[in-house]
Image (cartoon, rainbow, N blue to C red):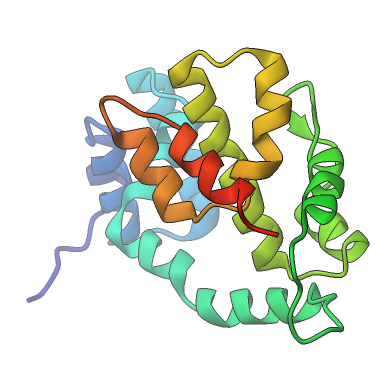
Length: 189
């Protein structure tokens, strides 16, 4: 299939940001000229740079370009932040409490990044991310059940030893209950 090549005039006739992105992508117009055209098109239509960025991030071509090499980048990042020396890390209650102290938020942002906690606890980046997901799931469950703050502090370390899948199922249930999860975790060492 041969695609139509758009001209400057065609680009300026675009009515939506997604149409604008499509026409810019398949045009013979040089990059520097596209910058000027972009300003003119924004003035004519009233759209902003954010609208163009939004449309660009959703275009199939640019989605594909962003994903190129993502598996390699992930592998490199995980190797770079792999601070685990021992073959298997056992998450005891004391270790979980230490993690919970480091996992605090200030103004809605984590105080320590994943890699910092991973380094401090001599763990992997993936395990820290999994534990953060568990904390968020448990907090959703607490909010759903309207659990008091005092009980949250008591139950949180116990529930952290639960399986992430079982926590997700409890959050999705219409009538959730955490007591059976707590009982199963209290019997563990």
